[in-house]
Image (cartoon, rainbow, N blue to C red; front, side):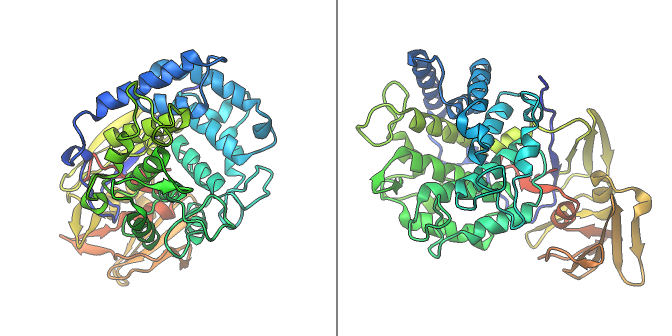
Length: 455
């Protein structure tokens, strides 16, 4: 079986706030030992299981925490899931789960049981951006199907057919109070679990902490947070709600240990750890005993905390296909590297990336070249003060001092920053250029001067 190749295009161009790495926060010193105890608890549950297997979610959590010994069991669980009645009937959630488990185990989901699971999931996206509840293209009720399809495709490092519409559909499901629910038709239930998961997908789809939809969701979670730092769902304080909120906050660059979510008696992480039992497992509700779902969700949250980013984004760095590209730019450094088809080349620019009014800029020729635009297809119009970039049938046009972006002559996504000239060099806000050429943009908390673009 094929191992997935690395796909990560890192640039210093995303117009997002700089987020400190978790190492500088108030994270408890015993977080990693707690995580190791949780791993051991899941493995003990595996030994006690009548089938000798856990749920695929448990193996995703174990592999995400770095426990590579779980890969063989994960493959067995994936084989069972592949033959599951719901998956065979086309259940989108089941396909998303299978893809996540395969990628976590290092197995290529585009050739599993001679099926291209990734292509099938991509084809489930409807014209309005929603991933249908069933791969046959039917059903727009399940928000979870949309959320986990977005996260699963992110993990593979492949393109979501229409990322902007996927994000817009999800934001369109947001309730007036900023919350989300698992059922698109449910406009009354304000669920912190669904809100946390929605934030995960929003972050993976390119939303940041400054986006209105994200801010509304954060406001809801702050209002819903209990005094011990935790959350309740369906009338009961529980560990899974804490886990979902922690991962959602991380996905949009918000520190779960920070002031925003520190209450008088704790924060989401300390509240989560209150559900951990002596054997390392987690309870759903206090006094309820060991619960596998609560334990695997807690492990995912803890491993995301120690890594500083959610698992689908971490998996994306290890995923992709042959011929894909890895490019690294860093703010303040003239040096950058380009990796294509496994070959790395280092180069030097004559102007380092810089930040102005919270926006990061890069010289157009180096940005365009890194994206794959040929030098002859980078055209500067002195009279109009505009630059055009052409690649694979797509023509972008940007003008100095203007926030308008033209794509093949028509208005593209509205920009909130405009090209500038610095030291005789045209510099662009690269997020908009990269996305117009089909890349997905994100950033890494552990490397606050870098920005990640995958495609």
